[in-house]
Amino acid sequence: MSISSQTLAPPKEERTPAGNKRVRASKRKGKPAPEYRQVSFMARLRRDKVMLALVLPGVAYFVLFHYVPLAGNIIAFLDYKPYLGFVDSVWVGFDNFSAMFSDAAFWGALRNTLVITGLQLVLFFPVPIALSLLLNSIMSKRIRKFVQSVVYLPHFIGWVIIVAVFSEILGATGIVPHLLDSAGLPRFDAMTTPEFFPFLVTIQSIWKDAGWGTIIFLAALMNVDQELYEAAAVDGAGPWQRMKNITIPGIMPIIILLLILNLGSILSVGFEQIVLQRDNVGPGAGEVLDTYVYFHGIQDGQWGTAAAVGLVKGIIGLFLVLGSNKLAHMFGQEGIYSSDKTK
Image 1 (cartoon, rainbow, N blue to C red):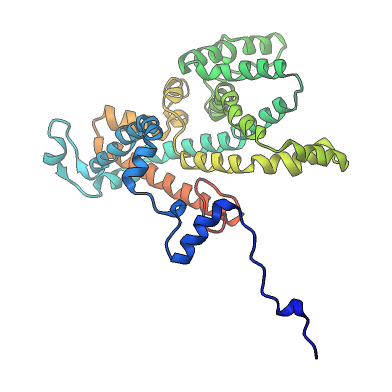
Image 2: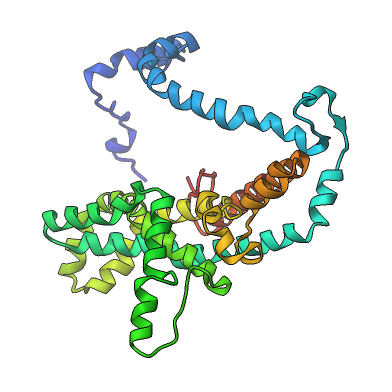
């Protein structure tokens, strides 16, 4: 049995660029290539000093206004008196939590909070997505920019003005009750009807912030590869098929990210909007956790109970964020941070 000379010939050396000679020589000597040597910490600081200087104000903001105040959660375990301070106030353990959970007003505020946030999650969250898809389908850039400017302009209007505008439209002497009266229909005062209050708050939030949220999804739509649409159109895919198979999957990471963040703040519905309209419908329908902290905690001097409510909100929000992010990983999404399975 003969063996060909080609089999016995030594393998040819692979040709590499001339710039890699130093790398090969370093490997033969057992030394790391200069390109791969570990950079010292001080060298990285000097290299990235401009970027670190740009990031520093944002880091300082979060440290001063978000992380340092976390030390104030110690009030939840004290019979806190402002004139005594943290050190001299009496330690009461979990008494503030017991008082909070035994208060019927707390459970009413929790119920109202969950109802409002549930409605906002179902009705408000999809609106910016739908609005961004509609704006993205407009061919004229001028019309798109005009509509986009109009819909996110209310974001810069204060809640006092927005509540006043809605009162002039939906209030007892507003336009809508007069139109209903002239049409022979019963008058409906949406501003003072307790059962309608969660829907009223949700409608106001949609009118104010839906356009602002659209900017995020429009930015995500710009990152979708346009060649995918062209290839799908050549294959005969219609507009609905392109949206289902290209557009929605393209912005799905942003949708999941914002959904997780909204779940983390599910126990916060905003203070100013609610407190301006709380007296119109009464505490039974208008009391939420944020207003409960203000009226039952700060105004009544129950600082420990107010801190206990805030601590419970933070813990529940943390578990919701971590749990929903883990669920996103199970479905192959990155979420707010990636895992080994999603990399």
